[in-house]
Length: 298
Image (cartoon, rainbow, N blue to C red; front, side, top):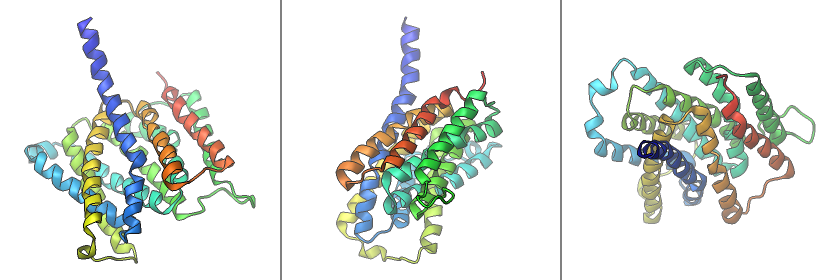
């Protein structure tokens, strides 16, 4: 009985970590929008936030930063995790800052469409016939959300849409890569992610025509930036722990908690309401995600 209790406790911790981490992501759009209103665009905010998280990680995880631990024959996985995580996070943050929150998030959560493809290629997971039906449901949901009244082909119609779609694609890839990389600990993978996001943010800031002077940032904005940086630091650790010890398709189901938090906060804090088509498409995507645990052959 004691063994079973310990086993259940061990299995519960990754799930709780994913719930906490996804809950943070469901509300983080709000401080980013406050920063944008104070003249700090999404790319710049994300860069500063994750640079702060990176500094925290370098200080707290300095004992894990050893050549032998990083370059152990699988360092290329860290490179790809950092690169794709950078794209996913910058796209997500700019999407929720400049787009409709729930619309961006729903497109971001097309994971049942992308995850099995990457899981098959990288983890040798085989898709069942049931899985193809789930993919069809995901595509139907995306088509419904993106449907244009003029009857044109349903493509993303705004910058926020494109960011949500591309960010979700990269996020699904990162989830599978984190699961694949059992050769590095959570601390090293987290550092790789923070470095990737910081560097991607710097490049995005250079490409963005809107600029700001860092010395002009108000004290109140610095407090928000540092608070979000610490929160993202904590969230990254929670998510890396949960994703490392949870199967990819099960993890994406748990991460749907983010949508619940986002829907509630977007309604009360931003007064955003989904259209009937967006509701219908969102329910299809959520249903596909819930069913995705049965996508692979046993």
